[in-house]
Amino acid sequence: MPHAHDVPMCRQLVEAAEWDLHGGWALGDRMEWSNRACGMAALRMILLAYGREAPSVTELLKLGVKHEALTDRGWIHAGIADLAGGFEVPGRAEPVGAGDLLSALADAPVIISVTEQFPDDGRKGGHLVIARGYTDGTDPDILIRDPSAWGQTHDRVRLSRLVASYTGRAITFVPLTAGRTAQ
Image 1: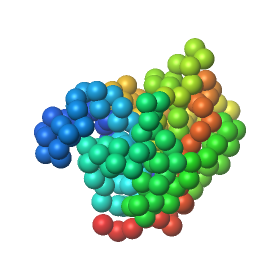
Image 2 (image 1 turned 60 degrees about the horizontal axis):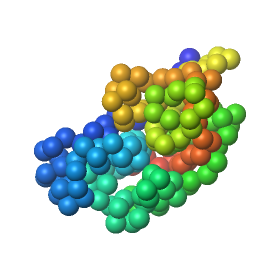
Image 3 (image 1 turned 120 degrees about the vertical axis):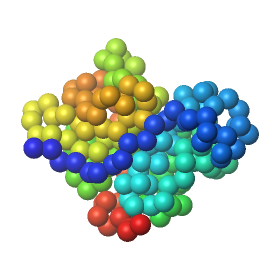
């Protein structure tokens, strides 16, 4: 039986029309930024899950850069949490061990740091996805929303596979029922 939060899917690939409409050209190359947009696509999914009007990924990229939530090494988790708070969705960057992930998912979706496509070769982190729920079992499926191209066709990953690339770093949010507003 799945335990899941309703989180709409967003892509990190920014379409040319959106990029142009929202002035993405001021940031530089659209495809280069699309490759770095997982954090802002994840934030957009969280905002939509909480019933907030969510800016486009391009607008969130510009906001993230303005608030210095991006470094050469990637998105700063505390910066993403601060941006979410600006949209009245309180979040917190904190460690969440793999053993605690299911309990963290009881009340709200969680942004987690994994390696894209969840390899088991020892690489950890570098890509942000939404963990939105889980199935029952000894090696449960973790239900995900992954904004990458791979994630467009994959919506779950076994906990054992997730753990192989999970850093243990996450962005947690207030309980979804408490934070949801009508649109």
